[in-house]
Length: 403
Image (cartoon, helix red, strand yellow):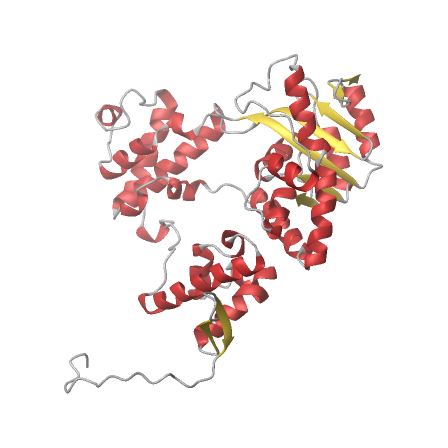
């Protein structure tokens, strides 16, 4: 364990890590951040772990030491603070074998106080009045030794997180929104723990919704093969086979390696050996795949009869977001609203804090129990419906041609 100029300890051996793990077991709150690379790999490769607690901070070198001994500290700590932690959780899971459950994400929590996906630097400046050192987004965190600028940047990423979390928590508590933030942070844990399903990998390809018939089955099977191949070889999926190549193969399924060479997007990237055999087998399976086994992308739309309601509730959510000073995207996305209107019981608006705040009022609006009205100041208000329609002065045509 070496003490750095930044007052953080540099840990790159088993003895230092064991000492850190023992110290962390005695704290009830810690903060962490990670620096990683995944531009040339399927999985994120951790290059640095930063940890802070009341009274100390440490930079751990994962290139020199196995981080699994820290799993106990992460598991025992009641509150683990991070910022924009979705990818960091995945990295920690791979490095330590677990995800800290008591997560408090300062970016997520701050979104309930009027911030819209704020950066850590923005929060530190606005909440703490602290200007964090600027870092180079493209710096190579795998180089050793790290520069003093890298060390300063990496340390500052965690040393202010605990103070930020305390102030944000106090303000959320005062606003009655702390439970909302805690529930939202818990969703990050659930999302990271969801395994990747290769059979739905084709959903991420642009233009797949235009595929029809057998082309869908081929796209599903080939994209699944690509996902598994990328994971096995730890390569970005695009380097295994580009999206354009999958679309070309789906529309014109080849039966041989030679047949693949002329397809757009495949030129020069035709797999060889066992990989070629695997790809051709995936194409064959896709051609023969029964339509009932095709995993279609979820429909993000509503029946035509409900579209007026979708426009209404979207306008109301926008007004509610302004009234509460919360970004509308945090309250409900377009997909959330459509899922609720389709009657999807798993919709985010049917569960948790959103159910009472948004889901139930929308149910009342759609069922006719409530109505939207202008408040006279340019805003919208949801109110109990009177049941008394305003008369419209207009004569009916002599013949009802719509009957």
